[in-house]
Image (tube, rainbow, N blue to C red):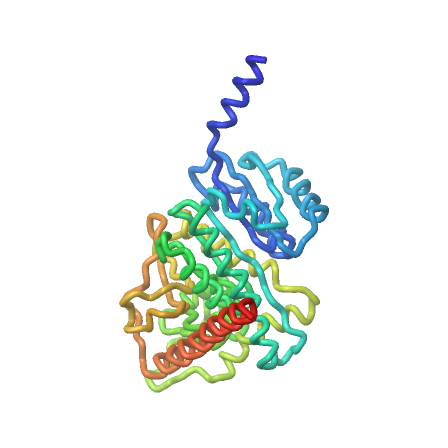
Length: 353
């Protein structure tokens, strides 16, 4: 009996590093899990608990994912828990990765009513997520939003409803888009994707974004790549990047889960201190006093990570064309926030009548 008591006491003293993943039955999560259980992503961590949350999934499906995760026999894995409701969501979370996504049946873009319904659903979900993160997660939690729809808006809703947590704890991942731009450039110049670095994504990650090459470098290219001062990149390039992911999904008939997971892991490694300190990554953040950008919306900007904190890259030129693009992104994001506010107001009115 004393041995049992001693073991229970020992287990109660264990403080694993807690990683929560929403929409855990999404394909992206399958690629994430094995890599999350790695010292390369989370250095100086001795044990990791994976908490799988899927509000639209079944316990049976989540149980299967739990068993598969346990079968990895990863040395860092301490525990896997599954959740189909918010009863325990984000409890003592060190890292939260949000993969929830909404899809439209209209391949060319949703109509206005459908967009409003999507934003209403997102708003209800992410306001509650934010409130629970505020109440239950650790105050130094790292929160990352990833996906194909309304990524900046989701991050903004979390931040607004988690007022006791520093705004620097929330980012929206733009690295998948950044890598897609690198692929387009690499194909154009006949080099490998790894030869292309420091591409910047500005603006609304899943909306009006702008790919900026002012700091980009291309290695192992046989020829001149720096154009004259009057040279400007064609709009075709922006369009090619915009449709890169759609081209992949049309051929595979599924989401670009592998590249999404890779983008998430790239940011987590940098955030955890295992990336290069001079590596420039694009993430959606609140830009307090930076580049004279609006502070009321989440915008994708170039950052570097040092000692577990991100900082906006200071040496970047914001020329008129780019500033116009950022204004467009900010306007678009404000409109999304207005729709989110309207959806909440209309929901409250319907409840009171």
